[in-house]
Image 1 (cartoon, rainbow, N blue to C red):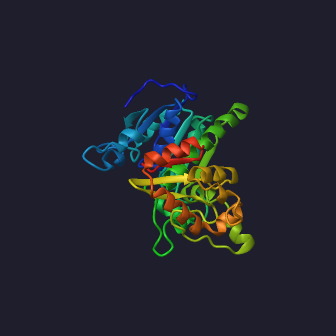
Image 2 (image 1 turned 60 degrees about the vertical axis):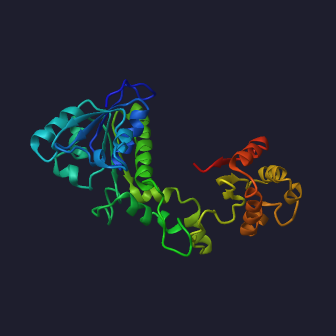
Image 3 (image 1 turned 45 degrees about the horizontal axis):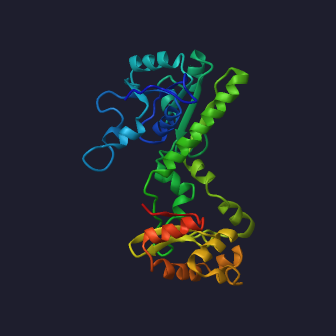
Length: 318
């Protein structure tokens, strides 16, 4: 699907050799910013994403394939490899998310490609990175989420781990790959040489785990699954209304005071049981129950009007 390029990366040529989600999402991001993305697809069915999605119309491909032009090339044969070399000769960025060692077998290793185009930036997305004891293992986004710690903390404590309803492991690794490519573009301005960006699924997930690792390292704390809340951050939850569900984030002291005004309970903001961040965290379930007793008396529209009027961060659960 070809569109007129515009944006901050206009004029940059990207060759996308990956498939499914992690590599192509990186290409999607670069294309959204105006890069000219040429996608390499295998003969026949093309990228499997063309067949993925729910319902009669497989629109997922329309999302991840936007702002890209497609070229068919069989990378497993010499003719296809030569075609890709020609495309890469004047390219700025190449993206691949094959199992480590695959492009080397095709004669398309970073060393091979830099011999053709020293300025080429190569983004490599894989399960465990290009080196290390797990590098040869196959990896998908869900495996990265498990190995990076995400799955252990998502869901309710009395049942097995849940998953987010989207492919967050893939898109995180792709996003970090995109960030690496942008950093490499800046570095190339000074060096004139392209770099290799190595983005691993599990490392991308681990990067967004906030303070969980140092909490364990320093205090031996092991974060447990906590359902719809973040332990100690209150009130910040989804609350039931007469006609649906509504998210309220009132955990800051001043915001909590405004929420109390909206509830008609300004006394709660100065009540020692709830007046501070720590106190609210210690009584999280009690405070959530108190708030939901109030929200259950209103429709979402009524509640939203109050939240807007009192500048409380809140939103519908669409």
